[in-house]
Length: 137
Image 1 (cartoon, helix red, strand yellow):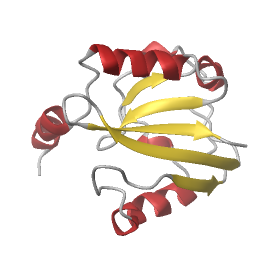
Image 2: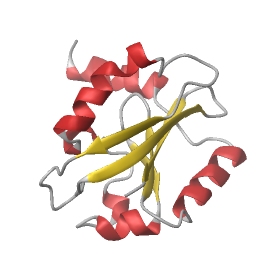
Image 3: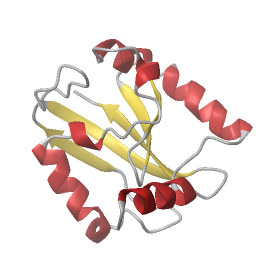
Image 4: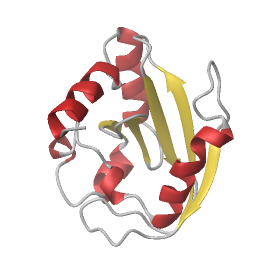
C-alpha cells in the first residue's frame, strides 16, 4: 500500500476526540497524577497526555499531538504489540487490560524508562478505539 493510501485509511478509522465525553476523557488524562497518555489504538497518534508525561518529553507536547508514537516503543512493547490480537485486545466490548514490563528506548525526545505500564483499550463515542497508557513504576 502506498503512503497516501495508508494515511487515508488511518484518517477513516483512526481515533478522534469528537464528542464532549471524549473531550472530558482527554481532560481526565491531562490531570492524571502520574505519567499517562492517550493514543489512537490503530495509528498510535498522540491524542492527549498528563502534565507528568509532558514534562518527560524533550519538546513541547503540542508538537507531538497527532504524531504517531510507535517509533518510540521499546523492543519489549513491540513484542507485546505483536501479540495483542491473540490476547483478545481487539475483542469488543471490553478487552482485558495489559500490564507490560519494558526497558528503555534511548530516546531523549520521547523517553521510556525501564518499569511497568498498564494499557487499557476502549471505544470512543464515534466507534474508533483509543488506548490509555499509564506508568505504574
